[in-house]
Image 1 (cartoon, rainbow, N blue to C red):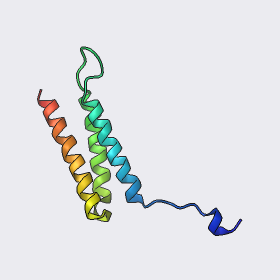
Image 2 (image 1 turned 120 degrees about the vertical axis):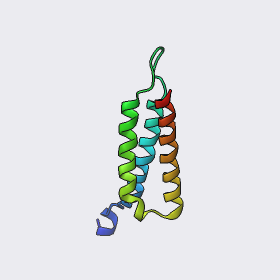
Image 3 (image 1 turned 60 degrees about the vertical axis):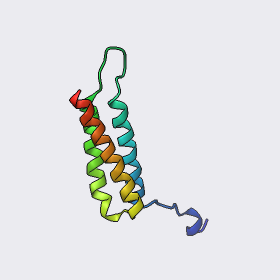
Amino acid sequence: MSDAQSAVSVPPVEDVVGEVVATLAMLAHAYLEPQGEGSGPDLESASIAIDTASAAYERIAPRLKTERHTALSAVLTDIRMAYVRKRGL
């Protein structure tokens, strides 16, 4: 097998971390919803997911293309606002 055939294409780190940021934001949204009758949102878990997503985003932000930068920034803003609304209830 030649080197070209056996080489594995490694995705850019900003693509992989961007997916992690989006996944953590979706997870945070899930934590903000009550998980059962009589239960409330899991604010602590949501906070951890948001903080981790934010730190990851900050690390890759300088390497992102404008449209990806804008999209991930909007996702994080949305989840932060949802968290503040839930915390305020």
